[in-house]
Figure (cartoon, rainbow, N blue to C red):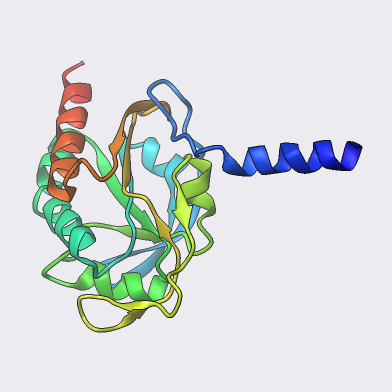
Length: 193
């Protein structure tokens, strides 16, 4: 009987949906290998927050259609984020090698947008972002290179300087470029306080 009850509890726990952090929650601090303009560096969320608000955005994979649009839109608007005294970090399950290419590509991150590698999905999971397994056999990205890793759902968190979540948004109903513009409006609202 105990074994049956335990098995039932485990299956219920596995079936529960992942719940993303919400407004007022404290964001987990993380450090990760990241890339900017094709150059690796060690990113620390705690260090970034010392400079001001931070937009942490999770995306499925570099060099895929929606993620390309989102990265390009962030890159085009980096001056506006800086004017609002905010920084941005993109996070995906891509390898750092893939992100070195993506961060330097003039069509996407354009050397303006830093992106961090969360290869095992632990950072995404700590924010309550759903992480899915790799597609069997992989699939070609927009360059024709096989993507063989898992994916984090597209979710954006705007963090105040004290590490609290000011805004959370994402999901399939929000287009990648709209996601960026909502993040920009959220940091402008914080700057106006």
